[in-house]
Image 1 (tube, one colour):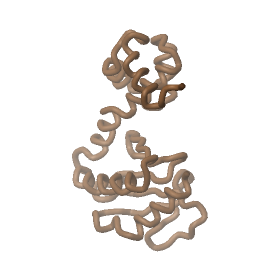
Image 2 (cartoon, helix red, strand yellow):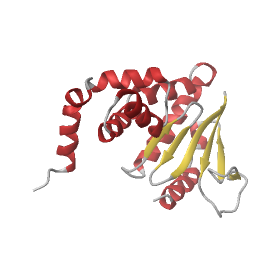
Image 3 (cartoon, helix red, strand yellow):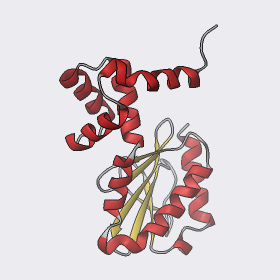
Length: 181
């Protein structure tokens, strides 16, 4: 009988030091220092520069992206003049996570992508006083609040306070989530 996926993952995690020569925390630190952000770049780096097998490189890259590296990217976005926007960001993320267990956050230098099978929303601290929430609602007509945006997110909503993240915005976000699966 095959091992459960959780058991197989636990075994791989336990075997990282033996199979790769370093514990996971050392790999995460090395990846953070490398400045690489994309999963594929990290896997390539681990395979080509450090001789890590594909399976372990993939696992280490996933764990590195799940670690503090992402937290640091978000912290940098809401540092200084944009610090007052952090509670609004947290409110958006909390709601996004309530939509399903498959919601994945992918922080970048200037934004956080919300995905499941594909991106459904994008959180951008656009100014010191505003978050732009991009939503993948291709085909929907714009309204006074739901503006046309770009190719990645067809629409955006400008949010300046927690009260702006209301039932209308949540409904649009839920719809974008439902279309991304």
